[in-house]
Length: 269
Image (cartoon, rainbow, N blue to C red; front, side, top):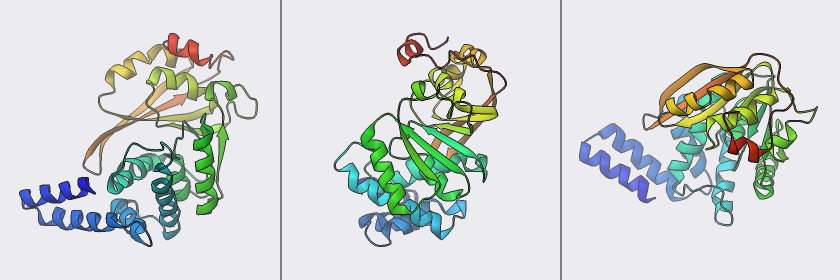
């Protein structure tokens, strides 16, 4: 709530009536997330996406469970309800235009279910697997899936570098997502082996990515992949964000991914 009030004060100082009305509304809906509060907040923040009532309802269930369970476990460092709606839900939907019905999608390091669960709500005929190595996090995601009624999402409690060598998972996904904070050079080795030929790995990033991209060059070469697009934008006009789209070009060497200790010790391959 203090953040929401701060934004109201900013709008007052700037004499911005439109922004003032918006921030008062966000402040009001953040007061109580019971009932329709979270639905109203998500509709306000995600209005540009023209989402279905079903998608908003499923995300509202996720939102409320996140607030409830964060008091007991470390699911998110963000405590302000409005910021959760923006930095988790709106940010997750940044890649929505790249997800098509019928796609198989893997989210590596899902944490509290981002970005895959909001995307699954919006693309009901795509199939999402949410992978995380922490059992309590996949258990939380399972509860969200069950209580929201999502039929196109499931979890996998495992380490990416280990299960990437399983026949049923290797080279099996149209899209791999990672919103993790790991450097791109590490993510490339963890994510690309899951891609079908011509599949796309989408890395969510913030800030200046030029040096990180440069450092991933040798990993991209080793994994037979290439960057096909870099989408830089302002999320909701407030936060600088980048999506890095990486396409798998051809055959993969079976040694990748290596053990995580080897990847981090020598991420450039």
